[in-house]
Length: 301
Image 1 (cartoon, helix red, strand yellow):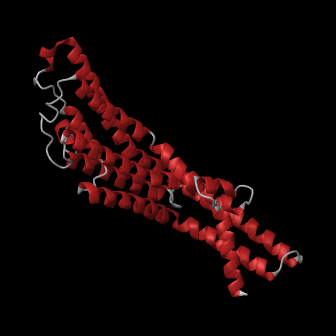
Image 2 (cartoon, one colour):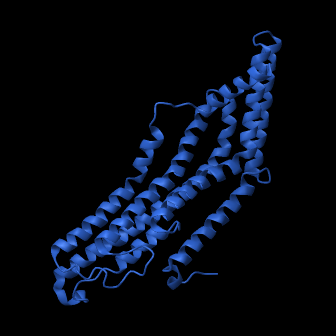
Image 3 (tube, one colour):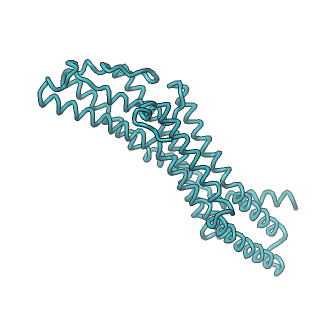
């Protein structure tokens, strides 16, 4: 069923449409990442071939006396870890990203009393639409006033558009990362290439953290709009909300708010990069799995 422009102006409809899109995309990814698709079968066959080579190589090392039974058991457990990751990949990525999305929603609901993904962006559109001079008719205030009005209106709409992109970006990124990640799991069996999967992990968690940081920035901008303009989130934005704008100072305040909002939203990726790239501990997935396999092998033997 097509969504009319009038319905799209309703945050409830917009969020429902966006939510349906996410569910449909997830439904299309599931068969793509399984053996029912050519892509999935190719990766599973590739991993199977690498697993055979990996097992034969370490078995030969054990038989030739170049490795003890402990090392052989460790490599066997590590191989099981890799296959466990392969078979649970779709489910694990879904729940990890969903967990961050849910956390962002809980944070938003605690402050704004709803957890709609596109709620803040839709609210900012409504704020921009409600800009109005004190006279109620910008055409009677001269060409200069008209230019100032439209500059502020454009900045407001641009802020709302950037806000919508910030909300949507990590979801699209998640789908792209999810498709790519499956093909990189076999590299965990090749020590020289295992760093590729580590890089993918940073990419995936970068998008997951983006959902949290981006939502926090959007919530902050909505709260500032409420303080400056009296545009309370969740209530109908009054047409005369910005009726007090009748001087250049008022225009500058509105423009400064919109510009700062655009800058902060645009810097969300930079903030996420600082978070995902920081920290003194930088352990690869392959190394962590090898350590876990070694500990389990020590318990077995």
